[in-house]
Image (tube, rainbow, N blue to C red):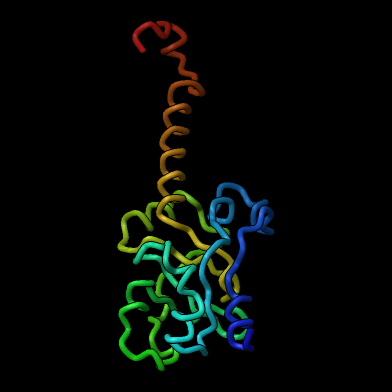
Length: 174
């Protein structure tokens, strides 16, 4: 394995069971995944495609590939489709990726950021802490968050509300 392949391999983040952000109340940190594709920005398009052809094969075209510098700071991103269609295989990834303009923080409210993702044009939002990529909020996770939020609001309306009017007339009309 060459040095470049070893470096690239270190940037694939395996899904871990415990995140330091998981202790915060209903925030992005409770729902984000730390299973994402992050590659160093100083490799070429050809190196990225040839080294990870098998890993990329099963992924959707709209999957984001996040580009990070040597210290793990998020610099840009590109979709897998854009990466595959890029003509110049000798171009470095830092010249190919687009700067990340929209990201979320681990402490952001989950429901608000989930709605932002669903209403937007992206399928993934990077979760950034102190400039470093720590996770990803996906559209599937966002749909789950919003579904749970709607169910929680319905339950709160039907159960936990006490009204003197309801107590006087009874709950027969509900």
